[in-house]
Image 1: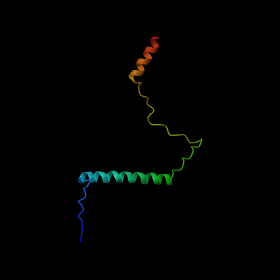
Image 2: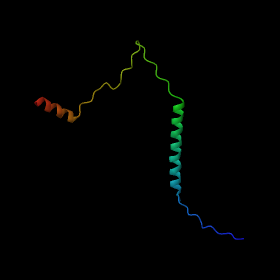
Image 3: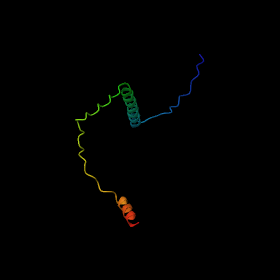
Image 4: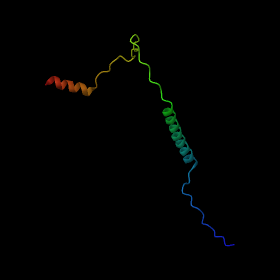
Length: 82
């Protein structure tokens, strides 16, 4: 029997346990993202119904206005000087 012995194969990717867990997490995130995209493409959301004229949109809770930034104040002062 003339059996030639093959040289041992060199392992290219030797990963630690932490690297394996990280790789598994990234792969799961990619697969989950792809599945979500596929589901949303297959099940589009219906368009919202238009508001009737008798119904008004609820007022926003943030009716307060913020002061202009300092750079805007400087620009206004320069325009007043001209």
